[in-house]
Length: 88
Image 1 (cartoon, rainbow, N blue to C red):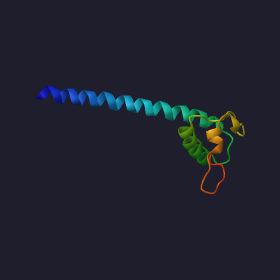
Image 2: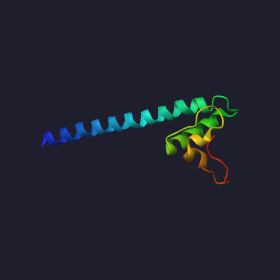
Image 3: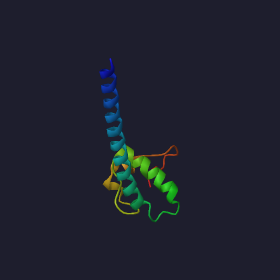
Image 4: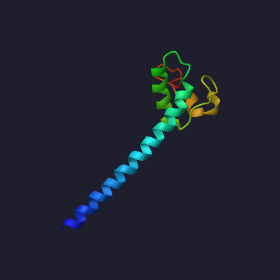
C-alpha cells in the first residue's frame, strides 16, 4: 500500500517542478524583451504591465523602444476596450 502512495508523491513533485520551470522561463523571456521596450517610457510600470500581457499572448515583442510593430502583427493588432492599441 505504501509503494503506490510514494510513487504518486514523487511523480506529482516532478510534474510540479517542471511546470514551474516552464512558466518561469517564459516570463523571463517576456520580461527581458519588455524591459528593453519600456526602457524610455514615461510610465514604466504601466508599459511593463501591458507589454508583458501582450508578449505572453503573442510570444513576441517588437524591437526597439518605440514603433516597429509590423515585426509582430499580433502585438500590433491587439486592442483595448476603447479600440486603441493595447500594446506599447
